Length: 207
Image (cartoon, rainbow, N blue to C red):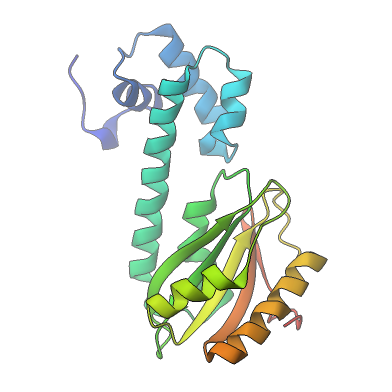
């Protein structure tokens, strides 16, 4: 099988390349079509697509998920390089949104910053359920201390697509603010990502 360069491959060819199958393989063609219309390309979790498309085995799904995750991280790294300083909620969203596309659980993250608000590290603190994140300040501040962060922004996603901060978000934010005061590492904002939208607790006056 002769492969075109990946940037010229169709969705079917890309899936075939990842799975090591021929482009005329019926299952491969159908799966690529499902991915493009109902799968990660449209923001749906791959696990959900796999449940609906029973002929996809766990190994094939794992390969696709690995490729998607690599793509997420590549896009996030490029966004981070383009965003020299983190000064607005839009900057935060630009960096983390590529990592959160299609995620069906809440991911709680932090952007560790230096004294000039340059991004030092994107920290994934925890992964929660479909409707709640499980966060304890200790691992968060342990990571921030490890990279000598001067300040930070916390951010997590709402898989529902609605970025409206919940009561739990507000309580967690205030708890982190108190810990940050003690640690001498300022919390600049608490952002929530939902689909193509985002919300800033600082802009909403909730910090």
